[in-house]
Image 1 (cartoon, rainbow, N blue to C red):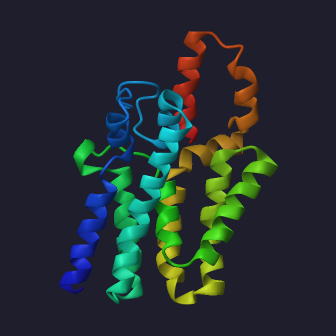
Image 2 (tube, rainbow, N blue to C red; image 1 turned 135 degrees about the vertical axis):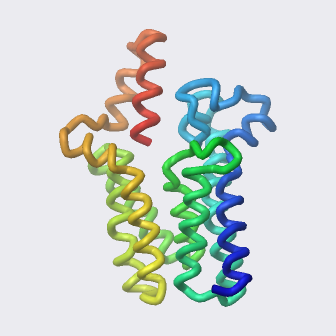
Length: 218
C-alpha cells in the first residue's frame, strides 16, 4: 500500500466521523439531535426536530462524505481495491465516529455517495431501485437492503473493475441492517404510510416511543 492510499483511507475515516447532523443543527440554532427525539445524530432525527430543509442538508452532507474521498482517490489513480477500502473507511467513520464515542448511523447515505463517485448511470440505478422497492413494499429498510444486494451486479455490468470494492461496501450495509432483516422476516417491520396514518392519533408519550423504535428501522 502506498503512502497516498493510506493517507486517503485515514482522511476518509476522519471525514466520515464528522457529524453533519450536529453541525447543521448548531448552525441552524436547532436542538442537539443527541439530546432530542431518538437521540441519534442522523437525517431522520433531524427531520423530526428541525424539518425537511435541515434534514436535506444532513442527507447531502452524509452523501458527500462518501463521494469526495473516493472521487479524490480516483483522480490520484489509486488502485481500485484501495478505492473500495477508502469507501468502507468513510462508512465506518459514519457508523463508528471517533469524534462522537464511536456511536453513529447505519451509513446508507455515505455508502450511496461512495457509489455515486463511480458514475451517474450507476447512481441512477441504485437510487431507482431504492425508490421502486419503497413504493412497492412501503419498507424503507427493505429499499436499502435490496439496493445493497443488487449494487454489485449493476457495477459488474457497467464497470466490472469496481465489482469487488462495491461488494465489500454492500456487505457492510447489510451487516448494519441485520436487525431490520430479522424484523422483516418476522413481519414486525412497519410500513412508512402506516406510521403516517397513525401519527395524528397518538399521544405525546406514544410519539416519543415510536420515535425510538423508528430510528432503529431507518
